[in-house]
Image (cartoon, rainbow, N blue to C red; front, side):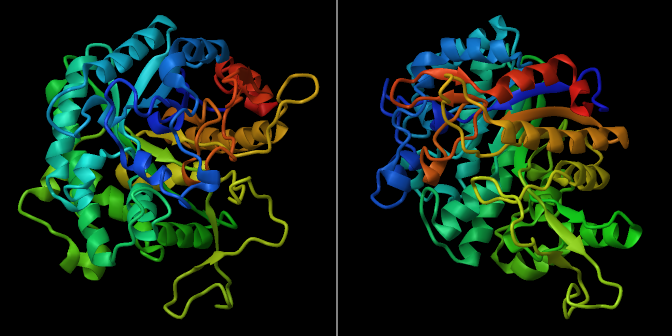
Length: 458
């Protein structure tokens, strides 16, 4: 496998999903604290109140990471733990937690990659309009400044936002995630513009506040289009499908072009331009230099083109997504297993923007439990990761610059509206006792790291 010598192997987690201590040490409410306590919103009424109790067990957890051999850990910071009101007075206890966590990671020779926002938006700011309020960009920039000034002497890898299409569309259009809104396209376009503006202002705040050169990106979720046959016709069709607007607000170009080109795709302007509250200078604010592109990829879609112009060609002449046959392999999230997704996701984004690629999340929910021998055997996870990582390695072999890979997730944790029934971790967590058990996949991943991916060829 073609992974560069300086390639970074890590794993990831998010504040609300693992920390617990949801109301401890003067932490403010997040939209997820409120949403998860609303009857009927989450599976079994599960909340992140305790989760993995990482807030109190971070030292033990860092030792687990060290045992696996992680080179880097992608963590997120809870905005309302730092600023209980979202703005104003800093909660020193909350900031102190991350200060100690960063020191603990560095002591274990694990590089922290810090994500500033992984969905736990402050409730008090939501009550002031949330992402509909343009001031969100400035609120977040001020929060960014506080965190970077506190941690930037030791942290040099930063990510602004995690999966903006998900927290915008699932949280504000579908209503299945916090805050549970079901807004119109007019509202959503406005939110998207403010979120992109927030990213740009946060990047500027990081570079202004960091006492050392910083590497900055974000983590964008994307489902790459995959050609069913690797010939010119199918590759071109898959590229066209990926950058086209057939998937509406989920389109990768809608999110990436403003950030990396300083412009909205023309098709997006044609469709939603009247809803986008663009002011002079906004696109310049969004378009800040990034050091790599972070992509969260779990699955892709196959694209076929039939030479006879059959059912796979739409009435407008564009290729259709290929359906999955009966019995196609699915994860416990009912997501199709598409190992080529990392290759094509890296290819499409790198050829358009020319930046190195980091896979900031990839993994699967599987059927994991403690076996009679006391271990946790998860061969499906090992097989899944091997297949996907081979795809990412192929991208490197084809000359695409690869920066890092972060497995999702280091621990079983709170899977948002799915509660605790979906287990993504390399490490099994007993939510009653908080016992951690390294799964077989964790021991396997250690070998992947030690060999810099060489064992993936076996």
